[in-house]
Length: 370
Image (cartoon, rainbow, N blue to C red):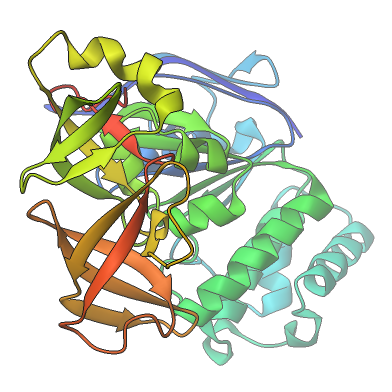
């Protein structure tokens, strides 16, 4: 187990600047997830850590040792790839044992470590089989087993679940998280799937265009995003974004939507946004509100900080426990997360309650959350 420190790291491919000045410190024992859209630089960053790609400038330190010029074998890193990278002519046992044997590990130690890893991963009854006889989930477990038999300083995962179906991905997410809890090793995991990032990470590093957009604990990024990009990337369905103007309303503030609707802001947020409203002119902003913060308004009375909105549900998407309803909010298509039987069919007129306590105000020019 070791810590990792990356300083001012740059990596280019010809004219493409794939990684742009990354500074990142990962403490020993942490499960860090690098997440972002395709092409954001997350896999390139992982490959530079592994030594599979040369860096342009900057430094990579593992346990205080600069490893810039060390080949992969000398960095003491174990890696799990997207395509499993198993030897088809070897048995499961031999695939798991391969790295140990290459390092001249004593036979008895190989036996002990392979058996222990196979039991931990639930593949101890498959050791005599070949890869062609295994399912996708079993193949991934073998690839993980091959990595964990080594007492490596870092464990790297490059989108290891992307080839699996949805049910297997759910199962393997839990397996990898349990594995980290058991081993307490430093693990760095790359994915484009924000659900994987949210459910597995101790810390999320969200990348965009070769840079770190924001990093922190999953719920910190989800509840306190620094930018519109972060707010929109995390969450499914995605956050709703609506054009609005910040205006005075009595002795408080409100957001005026393009259809003229006024959504009052909670009074405790007046001081925070008073300077934005200005003396007279309205300030153009973007309202961000998550689907789970829009629900059916009931007759029990308005709750503090909630605004009522009359809507017609255009699309109904039941998921079993919840129903997603699509409607027009200030002329923009938005989604509300409702109880399973709140909306029986499309075309129904309803009154929704929007939790303005949880709403974000975003500068439309910079994308920063205000």
